[in-house]
Length: 125
Image (cartoon, rainbow, N blue to C red; front, side, top):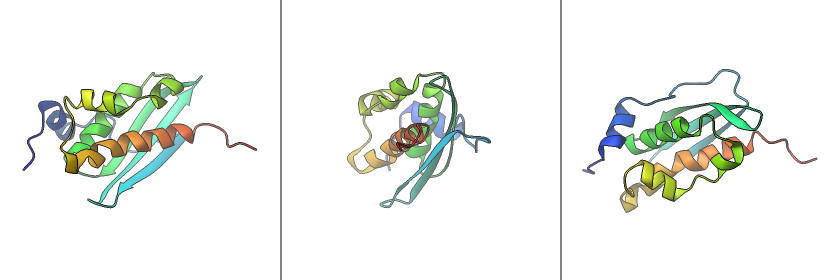
């Protein structure tokens, strides 16, 4: 059994921003075929900043905690700044790097968030 840090347990037991977002401006879905985690991130944006970020997930504790931390952090953030969030930020937020077999679980929300942000930009013509 993996011992999770307190922040992971807190955000798994009491996830922030969990649930669908009506009238989302952008969204993306992600899945981890190795463990079955599935996640959807939905965003609202105005004037180049994220005004609302929510997620729905059928996923493990680490994935849910990561999504909760991420959606809390990006609210109010400018889009380019949110796009630059990386594994260093993620591992710091989780208070440590996940075990090798669980890294993908933690990274899935970050990757999905990037695609949701990309969906906010108009498609090139």
